[in-house]
Image (cartoon, rainbow, N blue to C red; front, side, top):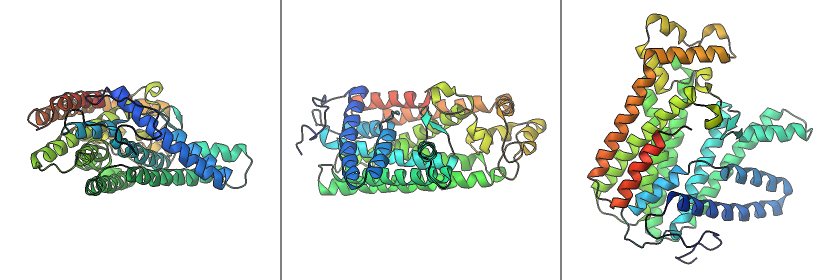
Length: 382
């Protein structure tokens, strides 16, 4: 594999300095498409049903998304590299982050029983639909969940395979892999705490909700990808730089999740691609909801109370609140002032992250790009 071009990658002639985000994402998409095409052919050769499994996984990976993780990793790497350093050798590692992300999304959707993602049916709904339309025996929903879990597992294996193809020094790849493994462990730990919180939402707190945000979202969305990119640059003996990336990543990652909390209640489904109010239906103890309960009057607390199964209102029964009740709960949360408090938390974290970068020993173009990314990631409509 040559240094100037990734063999098989259709996207060539990538600018060596401060590549525009669209060009970077185009290169990552090309790397993913080429890798997934080969994997699909290989599985199709074993059995056509496996080819169908692979194509569904491929479509989920290539269905769009913000590609924030490889973008943060790229600027983490670019911040310490020399001008003119080629990006092509990094593309397998950057693209691997998107395969890991798909693994996390597919499993998360199964656990949350989500119907849509990015405006399209989730993996388990796709497989359940195939099961029903083919007239197979057995429960369609159970098959859908089982197949989706396998798709997620497949994407995680593919991520490992693609990462291993990075043409970098062995010592560098070991350092990258160490960061990657830590990121995966933290994401699983955060997801477990998230699921655990849904089983005892009345005992949860703002502090616990923020811990989930750090592990499940901040770590694997911003903080670890930045450090992943730094590791790809090779040995950098500057603890201040690693600390700056860690602090910036934690702040922006938390703000990213706080924005997600707000969008989950007040976002436009036509823009977010997900139904509004899902977190409220399940009683998920987000920072927004925990703050609302802390700020609420006694009357408001009664409306925000949980039943033992996690539904927000005991009178609603196991099915949870309907559309009108969700709208009422969202209004009560707004009346407590919690959304404004969360907006302040987001702004404060982005401002502090910018202050961290101001003194970080990184290239000016990377500093500017990371400041822009912080705003884009936390002020998004979806």
